[in-house]
Image (cartoon, rainbow, N blue to C red; front, top):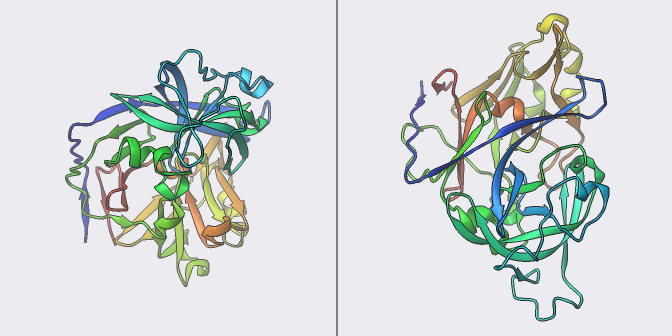
Length: 343
């Protein structure tokens, strides 16, 4: 038996407090909700609220030159306010004629897109360092018009970014970090020495840029599902509000997960050396006395393939996630149990 103790030692780090934003995708329906975990940062001497998203790779903020309804409902980045802004090309070199044609980058999310020009400015959390960013001149209505946050700070691996200067983990904060999306959500940065973690999951295919870990099997109500008989993977994504299941796995499970009175079966996801367990109240959103599963289905995740689960907010609400980009590994620890018991 393996045991991971709950002690995590943060060395010369800093903490970012997060707030939980809940939005009704369908007005008046508690069953159509999305969740975002948002913190504050300063970029170019301007304050913004952003989602700290392990599933993307750029700092994205709306530009003051974007005048659509989607952009104007948020705080927008203004070059006139900053004394340290530099216009850059997609390769990070300086733009010689900012008034001429500019490189643009379109950032795609699972539910929307944003297109912007590229700049370099000072990003300030505990301290200030330069970071390349995308300032959007166009933003899709969904999801940006639905939420109150201003932008997104990607915490993905370098391959998700346009170049090294855009990658927050490589350029700005290369050390490990711990994400807690429980009752008091926060992120602790600077965890070079993480004491007590003995089970690490090695990142698969880091050249794709995602925090992708191996899955050995999935059990529902104790029954092993055949879908992962030859192996699956899981994407650990703080920007996803749901537990994501491939349609070939999840479509037959949804009726039982919707059992009245929150009596749905437990879902167990087996990783090397440990099992993640979610009860009905943990993978659902409460709707009066019943549970509505926070589960989304999809056919495929593009280059990641069709056998990839998404460990979004329902998992990260229960388990602390410790991300180590230097050694390309992560750990998941059940904070309520003060540790993780492995199989």
